[in-house]
Structures are given as structure tokens and as C-alpha cells.
Image (cartoon, rainbow, N blue to C red; front, side, top):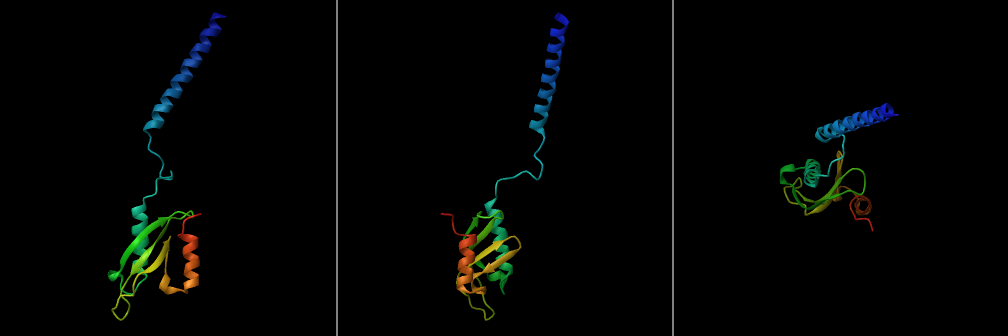
Length: 127
């Protein structure tokens, strides 16, 4: 019986050693790139504003305010207001915009009802 007990203790010690080595190894290995990361809101806003800027006639004249990130859907969405110069050189006044993925849509590009629906779906907080 003594040899069986020693064999069980030896097996337990070896397994404990293996698990300890694996635990230490796992604590030093970096996370894979596909691991979820915290949302960098400033980068999302900058990317959304850049999309909106590219959609106007004079991109260098674009001015932004009240930009924020909406996470209602799986794709982070930049919502805010843009003012830019039109083709005659005058500023249009601030209009809302929505930018998600590769698309940016402005309030002055569509009917008020269409944009209101888009804004409510993409930008307004859940209640």
C-alpha cells in the first residue's frame, strides 16, 4: 500500500508542477490581437469626423462640435454636428452627421424625416 500512496503523491506533484508552469506562462503571454479591447472613443470620433469631412465640397473648412460615440449597434458610430463652406464660399451652418464604418451621412443631404429616423436609430440613447 505504501508504494501506491507514493505513486499517487508523485503524480499529484507532477500535475501540480505542470499546472504551475502553464499558469506562469499564461500570465506572460500577450493577448491575441482578436481579443476585445476597450473602445478608444477619441479615435472613433476622429475617424468619423474625417469621413464627414471627406463628404463636403471644401473639406478644409469643416468645423465640428458636439461629437460623441454611440454604441447602440455593434459598430461604434460617431454622431455630431458639422459646419462647412458650400460651393459659393459661405458657411452652411451646423448640421448633424452620422458616421459609421465607411459611410458618413449629413442632415443637409436628405429629407428631415429621413435624417430624424437615422439619428434616432443610430445616435439617441436607449430609454
